[in-house]
Length: 105
Image 1 (tube, rainbow, N blue to C red):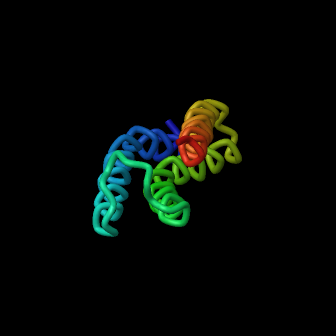
Image 2 (cartoon, rainbow, N blue to C red):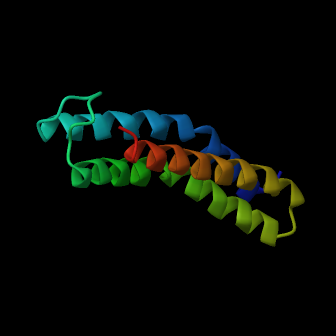
């Protein structure tokens, strides 16, 4: 197995860890600013801040996975397309659902 493909799979496999950490830190920051978790009464600037914080943490590992899978693809490893596709779908889906929730009441 190509070492870059292996790294891509490892970073993709550890993505749930970054998801948990991102949610915990985002909710902690939300309560630190004086808002109750689970409510939507915060101003839009606070909601955007929480989404940016969670995106930065949650997307870090899949983005690194995409980096290594593209490196492996460039080296001629066609099997590296799988972690690339999965990480891309994860990022797009998570971004879509969070941005959609931003405008939900």
